[in-house]
Length: 131
Image 1 (tube, helix red, strand yellow):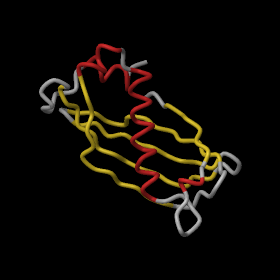
Image 2 (cartoon, rainbow, N blue to C red):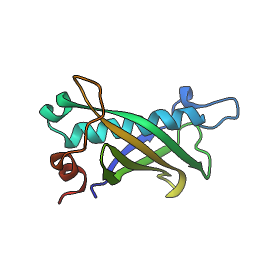
Image 3 (cartoon, rainbow, N blue to C red):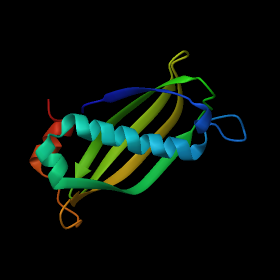
Image 4 (cartoon, rainbow, N blue to C red):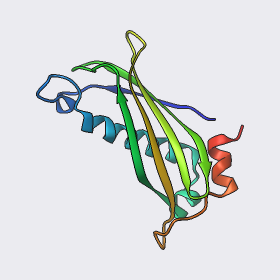
């Protein structure tokens, strides 16, 4: 399992009427970090050959992030089988190391040309789960 990390600074545009990060922003961050992880690990050929689409998001909110918080987002692919892949994302407040949000997303691999589901190949499994 290869863990990818990224720091995020909470901006004014991330804040909602309750003065904390809006729930929809976390969904966007989950997708953004998944894309960044894929782009880091997959070579140009794989990125052109395949695309990913979300089938399901599950998000558990434990605490709020507020303006100017610095967050550590961590992601990894836990399990892949058939056309589906299960990705986990956690958001921590850097200052306190407190877990704020935990997400689990089910993704489906698509052939980029046909946009049809594609069985996850060994080369993709290797980049997420290999040594």
